[in-house]
Length: 445
Image 1: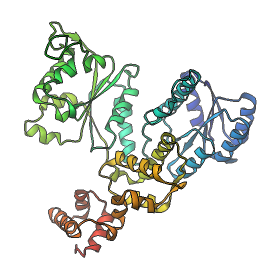
Image 2: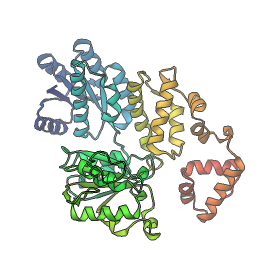
Image 3: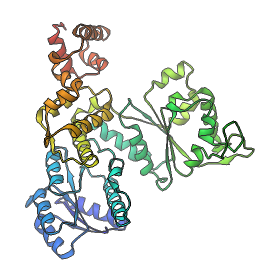
Image 4: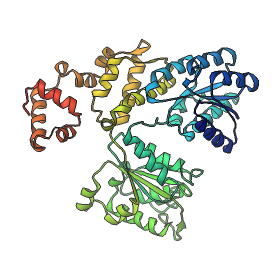
């Protein structure tokens, strides 16, 4: 898949993409209109089309239908803005392979191309279908909110360096996704990315897990073991929930980061390692350091650059974008053809506080996609399957204890000296929802 046609009436964007794809070994051409594109397709028949939805002489949707009618083997990826997500979903239904959000990230498109090429190779070799890998390959769509844009600006800034990055964020915000993105954009991208969940690591075996061991070094060591640092050599080691490491393990980790050498359990010689460490946690590290639970010198070593990932509640304008993205993945994984969500469902998504963040939203979309019998996911299904989201907007239908909720709101207002913004943040809801609840329970303020 080497012949690429880029269709966009913004000439500078088209030329930029053409240059980028050419550097990656693709033969790229540019068209600025549907008529120009059709002529190019008839003459050259590209393997791949990357097209904007809004073109000066018509709709990208019409072009997709034309291509699929006469050149069904051509793969189409649609470029879309946030406002055009519903149209992008219609494009998928009409035959487009995928869509990417603007501002366009060429690396995201390259991933999709690599997936297609791998899928083609697997099909030719009669190996298993590649559909099971779609979700991991596509990953997360980029948010358009100012908060998410700042995150990706920081990723682009720090990725080419060798600085240790500390990712801070609540559970479910996508910390591992950001860590992988840092790796993919770094000079170590050809090396391994090794994720480690420190939250499930035992104190007794942590040294063996991190640094490896030699056979016979302790009971149960029946084989040599490399350890995470050796596995990640020349690449990136991602330590999730790093705040859970024991103090002894923290001391060993600090020494390795300083010396850039490890010593497997039971070994006599040290092994040099070249590893970039990216860490993440949802803990309050200042509190952990103050209590002696986490070493301050290790924290400063790990925190050469910090990226704070926002909660979904702080980026409500991205909820619809993420929901449609997860719907697309769900359709492929469970072989459905659901087009989108009705207005009421999206409104419920917007008003819910999403304590589980993006992970919770993804799970909700997958569950609704699985059970719906219609092409549009409607709010009555949400009421039946995920009542906590439905009842957030319609508290009179909720089974929660009204008295308890009234007390929570009153206490939050008291703690924040009646500051509605701070109280809403404390309750993990937005101000609009807080005002609704105050009116419902006749709370003055």
